[in-house]
Amino acid sequence: MLKFLPYVLKTLWRHRSRTALTVTGSAVALFVFCFIGAVQEGMYDLQRRQTSKGSLITFQANKFCPATSHLPEDYGRRIGRLEGVREVLPVQVFTNNCRASLDVVVFYGVPADRLRGARDFNLVTGSWSEFVSRQDAAVVGRAVAHRRELRAGDTFSIGNLSVSVAGVYESGDPAEENYIYTHLDFLQRRKGASLVGTVTQMEVLLEEGVDPLAKCLEIDELLRSGPVETDTRPKGAFQMKSLGDLTQLIGMAHFLGYACVGLVLSLVATTTVMSVQDRVREHAVLHTLGFSGLGIFGLVLAESVALSAAGGVLGVASAMLTLQASSLSVGAEAVTIAFTPSMRLAAVGLLVATMTGLLAGLGPAVHAARVEIVPALRRV
Image (cartoon, rainbow, N blue to C red):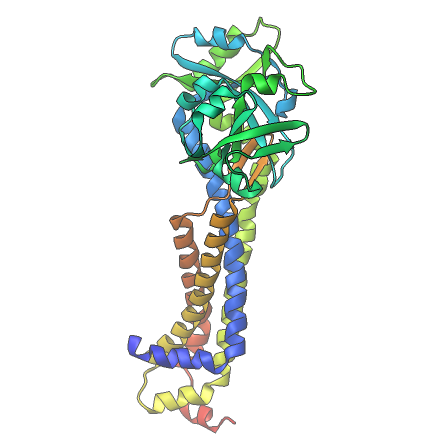
């Protein structure tokens, strides 16, 4: 069949405008499909990574935005005495927006000497010693630095908070690169805040083999007599709860992805039908030259697949490049989901484009294969 590829390409080139419009429309639909898939990949990746880490988050009960949660800092020492707890990291959170947004900036204030042990990332620029020695210093995730055009040595301000960028870090976790880490004391004493002695949440790191759900109940029971009631959850579950309605919207985006596939199917099928109708006499001539019905069926199906695949390659490639270059993320309540491009997503997009081309071409290909020679040759 490959020997007839030049014929297929010439047929498509014969109607250049129609071919270009179909390919462009398919590319736009696959571009949107990949963007939807990227945010879904980011959500699943976030949940999978946090579940595997076996860490817990202790938060003030019945609170939502981090700005409203205030736990006594000494809760960390009490939790740390429990059996099976490896480390407790007090975290002060500051965010510019608790609502769902594409431009959420999240600061995590933690003890500087314990940050490297609690997080798995590497500085790509800047100095770790400068971060440790300066109270107003911060290390910035690569995604945030890219979006905000930040480099080591810059000063970054948002609202009444201003920090000096001591370094930019990269992480194997795409969501992690959307955070800014600074000193715990700095966020507690920032202008307009009086938070000394309190933190937003406790991150509890467990020993291997410890049942996280049982430990959540144990922590909340331990602190029940304290001044602030707590709600402890596995980190993945806590983040999914924080994302709330945003998670449901991302889940519903599946339907938009299906609509994009339907659009490609409609575009390619329409173009293929028009092509077959325009070439009825040509197909009759091919029959007289000895082509079988199956051969003509294959030629028309190849045209349909070529159209859809061309749009798929263009749409998927442009989506992957845009996602890689833009470092997009969406977040709510100081939890972010990174738009995650991946080879798996690209492969799915190309597979969807190919299968759509096959489905779109079946009807027109059957019609072309069953054309009657004499009536077709008489057609003007």
